[in-house]
Length: 105
Length: 118
Image (cartoon, rainbow over all chains, first blue to last red; front, side):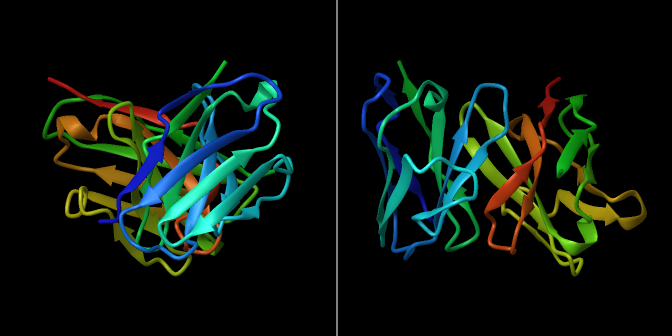
């Protein structure tokens, strides 16, 4: 199984900050990575696939990068609506998710 | 507007069974890939099963042989039959639309909680 390791587990930030979340895969997964945002009591929201392709309706302050085994989600200027938990997901071989990064104030 | 609504969760004893329903509107389940994904505080998000538009089905190793996914086109619904339930199957179960069979999910239901406990 391909493991996905996110860091940090928790991130404290302020409105306007640039935020980066890292996800490392246990083996080469090319660019088969997606990112999701989840708020308490809600289902995950699909943000990015193929490591960097922003989904329709997702604000441009979100971006993704990386290939191979290391991937990054960047929020260029954190907004109040962005405080949530973020998950990476590999879909190179079936699917596995990272353990999540909680972005808090 | 696409909407997925899961029902059928609840408290079940170890070794018991439960069937979850995912009722869809705004999309036709027989034209889509529909997955079940579960979430626990400890293990996080875990893909469980998928049913293709063709009717093919696939399962995670953790549930293979115990869970079964099916659909009723007339009701535009997908089902997850869960047998031989274990304590570790306790989770919120989501159904989700997979656009192209890639196991990425653009529409999700609100989830239904299955608690396995004696």
